[in-house]
Length: 230
Image (cartoon, one colour):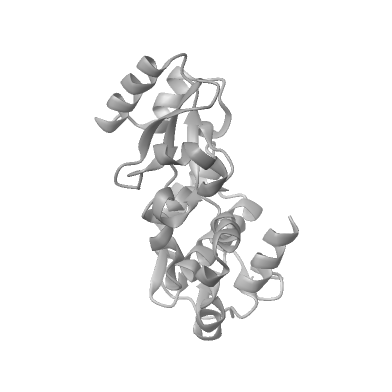
């Protein structure tokens, strides 16, 4: 918790908000990158799936926007692209998983997923007892020790794998897309893997420009998050 709080402050300390906002279909921007309404709605639905009718809970909306802003900062230092190359290359493992009964079933599930079966629908239908779509906390890949070789070749282009644990129990793994991972979690693991991965964050923060649609709030550099206006 201390490490994540420190990274949140470091990532946000130099960001400055801008009061001018004129694009109706853009919720926030960082330099030339825009969080468009459709993307915001998708990210919001991932946190609050019961949202409907264009009505947003302010605290949830501000959390979604804050997460996107930090993601853009990490993208500018190259960390997002690095993560998306996969756990073998990046040393950062962020997955969802389910636990089939045996390796044959696990491989059958992977085959179906690779043919286009949606992960969320798959988990809801086949493993309804599994919370949060099977998401688990990110870890350094090295903590898997001799089992890490099973993640070789996994990337966003090839996100699924069968994983066999030491006790011979089995899992189906899915590499989580960047938008589904808290960017501070990625940053925390990167800090543990190689602090140099975050070495350029300060330079990016010195020059980045942030805007937020005032209906959602404003970015507060001291708080390190989007806060309500007023």
